[in-house]
Length: 216
Image (cartoon, rainbow, N blue to C red; front, side, top):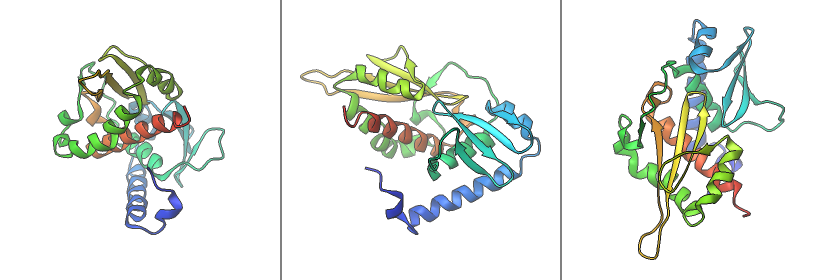
């Protein structure tokens, strides 16, 4: 279970995220042609002081130059983890088109070394929650803009960012075999996010899906 932000006050975890956000803001400030970067990332460029980018099917506003990030029509504070992911995606985006070829986390550069942790944090809770009720995944993912895909027994794809589709795949179990699952990415994902960011994003989506069904 994710800890409440207040319980992490001044912890190494919290300080690490604060530093990551600061560094991400510095990278944003280095961009010379903000309008071009908006084209590469699929964001909307609104004048010289505002960028709107879709993240998990919702519009987020980045206000410049002070880098204030907010969810449109919401007074809720955007979690620091989400702010960092949004900035990392925007600043790294290369604008390369989708390949249509899906890969696993192990196939992302350096991913094989981190895969055990990735599997435990992103795949295992996803399978545990939806493995015995795969159809529930479809309706739950729809809240994040997810739509049915044609992999495994049940699968959905959600556009985490404009150029980062992520596909969650489930295989039903039976009396002898436990349910199984996988998370797939377009082969160009490294042109938009670092390997670590892909893991954080996948974990974030998994727990959003699990949380949305916690009372089901």
